Each structure stands twice: as C-alpha cells, then as structure tokens.
Length: 403
Ligand code: SF4
Image (cartoon, rainbow, N blue to C red; front, side, top):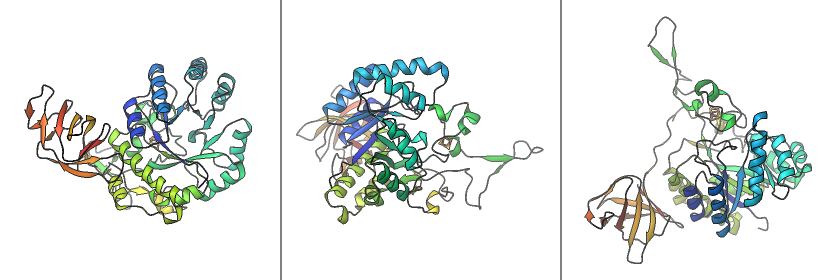
C-alpha cells in the first residue's frame, strides 16, 4: 500500500496527548482554550500547546490545531491573534470551518496547511473543489456521507480525506444544533454542547403537575434520539478503499482509558490492514477491548447506506458501563515493581487487567502495595501514587483496570 494512511486521535489535554502517543497515534488534533468546538475538553494554553507540539514532534506525531468555531464580529481580532500565535509554534495543520477564518489563516499563516472541518458540511466533491481552489489541503468529510460518496470526492479532487472511524455520533446535521442552547444555554456551535439529545425526557399533562409520563417510542425506549456510537473496525479496508487517508477517532472529552483502548485497537487494526488488506480480519481481543470501554450500541453510521445503522438505539438506551479504570503506570523497573497514579481504589490480591501498548490486555494479580512513604498497605487509595508489584512487566503510560 503506497498511500499514507494515518490514525488520528483526539488530545483534549496534555495527558491525553501522552496516551495517544504511547498507544500509537500518527497524528493528534487539539485546540487552544478559545476557538474550538470542545470547550469542556480541557484544551491547551499557548504555553501548553507549544509543549504539546514539541512533545508530539519529538515522537514523530503530527499535530492539527482546531479553530473551527463560527465566530462573531467581536471575535475576529482575537482569532487573528490566535492564528498569529500558531506561526511561532508551527502545528502541522489548522482545522477551520468558517470561510472568514479561512481567509484570515491564509493571510496570517500561509505556510500552515488548512484542513476543512467536518462542521463545514462538505458533502460533495464540488464543494471540496471549492476549498481546494482556495488552498485547502484536506477535507474532513461531513458525517452524513456514505463511503461511495467519499470515494467520489476523493477521485474527483485528489485531496486528503479525513473521516471518523470511531466514537460518539451527533444526531444533528454535521453537528449544527440548537438543542443545547435552548435546554442549557450552552451553544453546541461554539463548543459547549451539554448533549441534551441524550437526556431522559418525560411528558407532563398540564392539569397533572408532577406526574411524569415517559416518552415511549415504539414501546422500546424513552430517549429522544440516543444515537449509536460509530465503530468501523469491521470496515477499515472499505474505508481505505474509498480513498480516506486519515482515520479519525472522536472524543476529545473522553477519558484516557477510553482513548488508550480505542487508539491501541485501531493502531493494530490499521497496521494489519496496511500489511495485507485482503487478509484483514478483526481479532477477538480488539472487540473485547472496544467493549471494555463505556459506549452506546455500536453502528456504522451513514457509511454503508444501512438505514438500521442510524436508527437510535432504543433497545439499549444507557451507555454500557465499561471496565473500571484503576490507574496509570508512571514508571516501572525490571523487577516487576511499578509506580501507579491511582484513579480508582484497588486492593492487594485483586485481579486487574493491564492495557499494554501492544498486544491483547493481560490479566494479573496485585501482589503487594506500598504507599508514598514506603509502608506496605492493603489498598491503593484514589488520587494517591503507590508502588505495586505485579507478575507481568509494565511500562510508563500503560493503564490498569478492573475487568
Ligand atoms: S445536543 Fe446532541 S444533537 Fe445537538 S449538538 Fe449536542 S450531541 Fe449533537
């Protein structure tokens, strides 16, 4: 396979960036504090962003900076300042949706490639050609497109095409939605969606206050939309065959345990695909890993023209709980000792799973625990750093969880 296909992961914080690098992302997307569509995800100050880009580049990982809001008049000067700041730290691309910001970027940072955000709703090759004529290098395809439509866009334009391969799906048209503005005064189009489409709703009849009648759809559920999560692990060859050059994982707001599992699985799957696309088969341990993270029922979105794949998941409205994330390995030594940043309490003798950088997760038993002062203890408390003894070797940034 001669085309370069990249695995692109979200990096909503510095820690998430480190995890994405550890588990094999080729590139990450991140945002400054102000001008992305993920205002709750942590995001980076100018100093942090500089550090992030340095760390990523030192590891051979590309960084794309999102600046994909639709700004108001008053924000134009601040956007100009933000773009000028990027000139110094040289990300590998900037992600833009708005035509005005695109024009500013071409003027202020003409040497930094522009990727057209999925929020720009690029749904046809003609619209992709429009962006190409203005100097855009990559289209992040609208989520509504089928693989056949993406194939045509790739063929007609010769552009790089980035498309989501895994993650939560927004039920509105390319993420344009006012539900959150109405329900929570948080504008989804400015990165502050509170996901009210997934809240639990009921109806109250005017003369019976306090009596909540669930909204029943086909007697199968009480959610308004409850979109499925996208999972294209079975269809990577088809995505590559359609001309997609960047497989994008959704989830800048998700935790590092989610990120670790998804990046690791798609890294291994993409490598398998690239080494022999015809022999590609989904491994059981990949499915196990993707099922071990909290998720809504998986589907294939609009890609395969399968109407059932976009029907809301009425049968199974709650996201699955996923395995309990216990901690992150900070360092380890050859004798099987490891220092752990504890995220959820665990105990000596407990069976855990190690999410290794490569290969299936392995089960182990916590042999012994020492607290920060070096005193042996029965339990590792949340928020502490402890040393533990395991049977298997681990390395920094490996995660442990309760199976
Ligand atoms: S409320 Fe739901 S449909 Fe609307 S933007 Fe947020 S996630 Fe998308």
